[in-house]
Image (cartoon, rainbow, N blue to C red; front, side, top):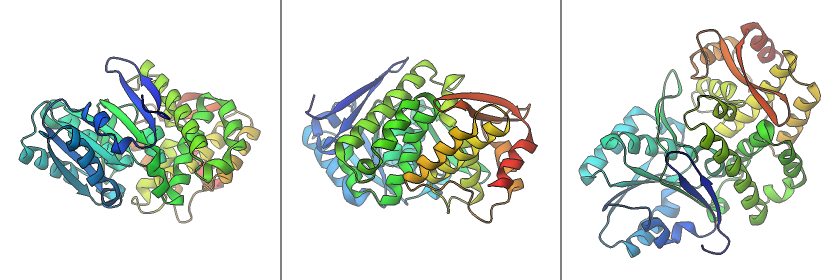
Length: 364
C-alpha cells in the first residue's frame, strides 16, 4: 500500500475498504481497480469539479484507456439534493449507455455522495459507487455506511436507499482547499464519535484542537481514521439501522429540523449537528438521564472548534417540533431521540414528551 495511506475495513455482507491519506485522487491504479466495466460517471459539484474532476478522469483513463468517462456537475449545496437532480443523473447514465457493471464516482462532499450514491443504487437496481469525499464531514460520516438519499421540501433524506460503496478513497490533500467554515463543520461529526462511544477521544480532541484547526496532516489523518474506525465497527454490526447504528444520529433529529426549517440556507450540516448535540445533551439532563456537567463540557469543546451551540435567532420551536415529527427517527408512539447517559455512552430514547423537547428549545 502507498506510504502514508491508512486503511479501515468495513465488514458485513458487502465489505469494503476506506483508504485515508494524500494523493489518492491521482492514483490511477487504485481508481481503476474499482471499475469492473467500461462506463464511468464522475459526479461532482461546481465548487469541487474545477479543482479535481479532470484530474480524477485523467488518472483513471491513464490506467483504463478503454473506459468511457463523463463528468456530471451539479450546483453545490443541499438545495441540489433533489429528485430533479436524481432524474438528471439517471438521464446521463442512460445516455452513457451504462450497463450493470458501470461505476459512479462521487467526488465531493455529503450532498454529492448522497445524490450520486442514490443514483447508483437505483440504476438497474444497483451499480457500483466509489466515494471520493473531499470534505472532512464526508470523510468521517456520509461517505461511510452506504446511506444514500435525496431531500423533499417536507424534510431531509426522506427518499433513499442503503447502498454500500465499493470503496471509499479519502484524499486528505483535498482538505487544503476546504474553506475554514467547512473544516470546522466536519469536526462536529468527529466530536460526535467521542460523544456517543469514546469519551477518551473527546480528551484527545481537546488536547489537539489547535493542530486540527491548523490542518496538521498527521493530526487530521489520526482523527479521520479513528472516526472511521468507530463508524465502520457500528455499521458492520448494524448495516440497516435496526439498533446500534441509530446512535450515529446523536444530535441529528434537532439538526435536520433546523436545516429543513431554514430551507437549507442557514446553518450547514455540521453547524446544525453541533447545535443539535448540545440540545440532545441538555434534553438528556432535563429528563434526568445525564449530568449537566457533561453537557457543559460538550458545549465548550464545540465552541473550541468554532462551532455554534445555540439555536439561530428567528426559528420557531413549534415549527421545529413539527419537523421532528416527520423525521425518519420518529415513531408512532412519539418522538424518538438519541440521548446520552454520560459522555461516551449514548442511548436511544423512545417516546420523549413533546413538552420536554419544547422546554429545551425555548431555553436555548
